[in-house]
Image (cartoon, rainbow, N blue to C red; front, side):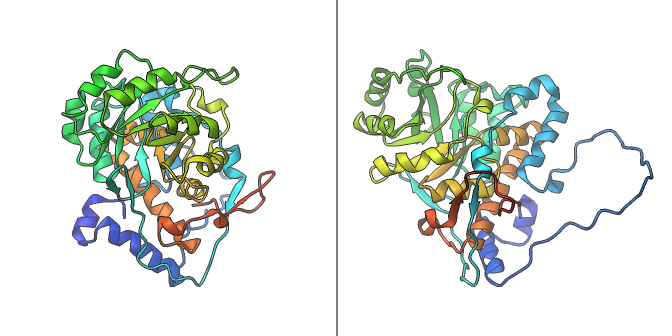
Amino acid sequence: MTERNKGRAEGTSRRRAIGVIGAGVSAGAAAPTLGAVPQTGMLHVPIPPPVLVPRTGLVNVLAYEPQARLVLGPAKVAPILGSDRTVTDRITLRPRINIPTRDLDLSSTLFGDEHFAPIIVGPIADQKRFHPEGEVATARGASAAKSAMVVSSDSSMPLAAIAKAATTPLWLQVYAGSPKTKAMLDGAGAAKARAVVVTVNAGSSANGPATPIAWSAMDAIVKATSLPVIVKGITHPQEAKEAVARGAKGVVVSNYRGGNAAALPGTLLLIAPVVQVVGSQIPVLVDGSFRRGTDILKALAFGAKAVLIGRPVMWGLAAYGDDGVQGVIEMLQTELARYMAMSGRVSLATINPDIVCVHAALPKVSMNHE
């Protein structure tokens, strides 16, 4: 389903393909399984050196990470490794059967634009570290997968070139108080940007206290642009409430702390308290260690309107360029559709907390295996 040529040959759009997933689950179609591994006893089979496998041979998003390691090597791949899935794996889904799930629809509307699915490419700085075409290749891949993209203020490619490569909405990411903010905002019009994402709380360490949010800097950004401003870095309902009072049109629940995300807990359990306070006024988005379609479904169940995906997209970019970016996003879209259907949900509006169960410890049996 994720192959561009196959979709064209069959004359089937991604939207129709998503609907077919629901029809298959509704009809009780069995998921494909891997064949049994032959038993070789004590036979020692020589292990060939690792090689990059064809993208179409990868079975889930996690499989992209070792491919990125092969291409980049240990030092270059280090910035896009790491996550804490302790919270994520404590949350399981409640399946529902015998519920019609034909015509699955993943679409939603955010800040005036319709999005094919609630999956957005998050901001990652200096993407030429991972691929020669950097953000331009990411924009092509995201557009092919019908996903919006957030462009980092520390982009390694000109904003104009990224905008030329994109056919889906671009959001611009800036830091509160950064001297680069004005230049990004000045280029927003030419880039046809649809929103500005202001990252706050980016200066604290994993073990230290969070840096206070520079509200005055955010105020200046709200005054300087007519675009909707989204505050990224919210971890507490009071922060979200303050952001709304100061003109934010959206917030991103995020544990980003200047590259130390691997040591921080996941954000899933932070979503509901924020949604309870501001969810009726503005959309609440989230990022942080999302690696599977089930992860995204859990976030939606807690009230998030969309999920930002960062590091996995860079795995795809590093290993396969724009085709890998497209592959990562489309795989997540397909997994989200599959597990929506298995949970008896046909649209984002039908997803609610009833489909998730939070465990005190890791459960022995879960529905987390794609």
